[in-house]
Image (cartoon, rainbow, N blue to C red):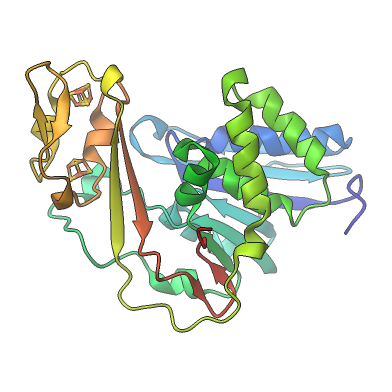
Length: 291
Ligand code: SF4
Ligand code: SF4
């Protein structure tokens, strides 16, 4: 691997609001600065609060003159959301790599009439030879908190950069709340093991892929406002006698994510996965193999 004090590279983190894109960019910057590198960073987060695009471009090297990555100069794209990563493909170098979560987060405007079942995101993207697709929420869950999915992807990215695990751990420890350090470090270390979890021989990726949805409710955070009850197109939520919501027919959930986006108390998490039988494609594209 290259001398970490001489490496010159361009990285983009792309996702949607609330996924920790800016945090991840800060962690990468901290690691580079610890090695004495010059770092320039540009962020876009104007529509972040309600599921809009968020990105962080990080350029580092012995000397860097601008923050924006030019077409054909992107070494790594890290997509916290599948479609957001897709936008950056044209900027990749011929050897550039994309680490991408297979999580979908569809903007509310695109949710009308959406039904569960087959995946309509562009499957060709997952088959691209430069793409490493990881079921990051599933790995994060294994680490202990689904919200660490972005750190799982940082762990995967770290295996391609010449910085020590300790430098990454220090940056994570510095950037996340003290009570979340352990779970984030676990997520990071699981992400670093992504190559071990590749299935060597792959049949064709099954067609169609099927989306699986999990609903999580933090009851103690629910104030009973009823917003989720009213917005859910499938009428899955109802208020009980304690004025806390509960699910009445979770199997009808399409994973549209409206309830999660509109809950003012952040009490709901909607996690989508692709079907676990669709693990890997020709040994290149990795969907996490659970232990
Ligand atoms: S939107 Fe959130 S706070 Fe309101 S009822 Fe639903 S879960 Fe509870
Ligand atoms: S429960 Fe939430 S994610 Fe599922 S269909 Fe209803 S609004 Fe969409």
